Image (cartoon, rainbow, N blue to C red):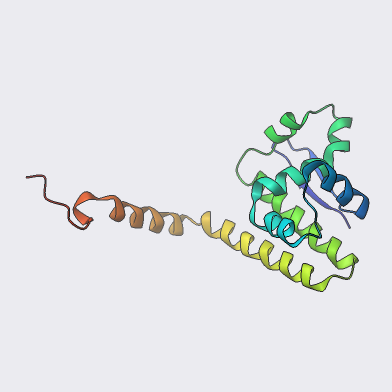
Length: 151
């Protein structure tokens, strides 16, 4: 079942990966799902994932008369790009599952689950405050080795 995400205008987009679409994206983005380095790049780079998604939804965008830049503008906003990315990775795991590639499924699922945990943690107010406090202690001149009092 294809995955969906909603952009910042409320428009729903369907992400579906097939072998034909994988070949299409490989030709345009020079990103081959079956090349281990390219697959790792997809798992590690939000920008690469969002570029891949563009090619998967280009037909839908064309129906709405949207350019790639207009589509990209719809990915801005709290959580929109993350949701798009997460749904893409879920669809990628499903694609590998349909092809009977358990190692690729596991690797993709682990990356997606790790990113989702990180995204939730980054939105936790207590975690954000603890990070701010920690960073403030690191940037105080008196706390730096070799620093002198301004007196």
